[in-house]
Image 1 (cartoon, helix red, strand yellow):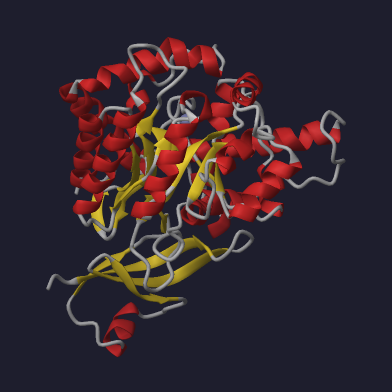
Image 2: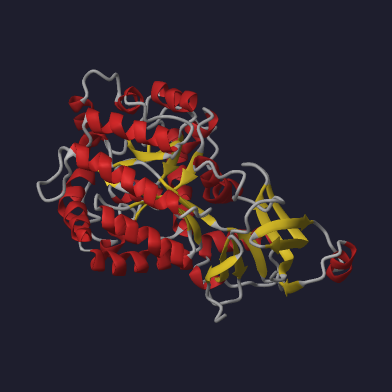
Length: 449
Ligand SMILES: [Zn+2]
């Protein structure tokens, strides 16, 4: 048996969307990747360990510029698109897909290319503190298996999806319906056979435009049969919505298209949801389907500004996504900041009468932003009992933050603990992440060891 790891110092985590708890003199005892003790206000850590008969341990003492926070959960990112991140940001969605996305993703039929690109992408996300990520890959089975192997080796907690598309796609990047379904089964079985507690296959129709009814029905059957989640895109951009609805005139709106194909449920989550009617939001709430709010992408491809508070107040689960490379930043700190700007934009539009709702709208607070990037994402992925905060029994997926590590933050000595957290959220960077842990294993970090 290897010794426990004991962390003693400031712990920061969300108890609920409105309750950010900052524990000074906190103790976390991690055994075999799991939090076995969490204690508040401990004056003497040695006495605490003795009292609890914890004998075999490594003690890590945090200093006053350091704290531990749950690892970030990115609920929506495209691994192959990392290779062209930042390109084509002058375009909007459908033009950008045809110009950059489809040609780039086609190259992933070459597994060697996939190996290099995916290793780079996943390493970068880990360095930025994304301990859990829900990935879209491409349509290519072998490259999807390669991505799974890479993530397993690098140690990230991940949901991994082989993308499906059998219509309205270029000749060089499209599948036959039967082959798409067969390869999806093979991929799901490939991931499940690993029996890894960190890896989950996710059924991934790209979006309704590129999926026939037969494909979507087949995919919902696969998700049910293997009991795996479903991810896709929904209501991202006005042109996309119009085109989508024209393809499925028998469904009453875009959200109903997925519902009519049995793709909405408790294990489903939808990226974007920028332009939704009250009826569509109610349908997501009724089906217990979550959303991934991707504010950087929504600004960058000028898709629109999503009012996530509207979803939260309707009882829809909300997490954050980078949507690399519709969003240009592979960082959840950026997702937090973009979400902050989106929320402030909604506030201004309502105040000035350009959106209905009046002047009493409350933008998201820093506590809410941190919740959405951790616990909110965990709930969207159905991982609320596994990660998201430091409750006893959860996995130790965490970031050891050091504000003195030249990561863009200057401490002046007068900051309250809450101000330190805010300085990290708004000015911090990967250099402030000394250690990044997934299930207790150190998988990245700015510290040399
Ligand atoms: Zn996306």
